[in-house]
Image (cartoon, rainbow, N blue to C red; front, side, top):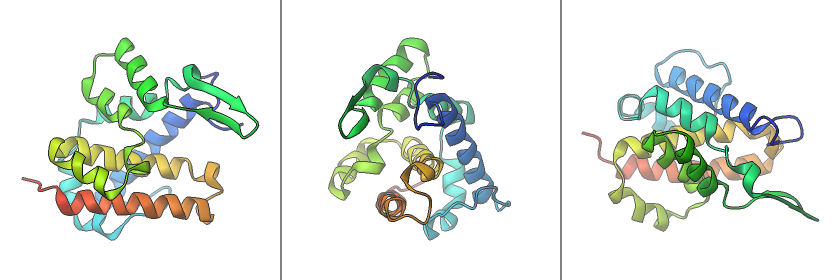
Length: 183
């Protein structure tokens, strides 16, 4: 992971550590504390802060999933005239992770790493009833941390590219927060 570059200046390992750092900052915000990164969060996050904080996977699982979520990118890396690609990296990373570690919850998060970034409302609606709230909440929080960690790669937080990705992710996360019934 140290030798596979996420961007020209950040390895996939450094990126994973940065994602976990953003996740910790997100927990700070949800706990009513000061943010280090000034994350852009949907209003429903604060309304549902207590549920988000209490219905997620353990911190150790989140740390492992976020740090290693791109561990298989070096296996599926390819390059063409349009640039570097990591096709099917979530599934590849999940399989490699499962080969190295035994945390099935982290494997699930890694295998679904791209779900909220790419799925339609209909695709997510089919997943929600089959998935325990802790998985959905953890995926939601991890996805926000990852998007913010990737902001520079997308042109910065003020870029159209980042704003489009943030808008899509916000729609999927709001869908989860409206449809998941926390007990």
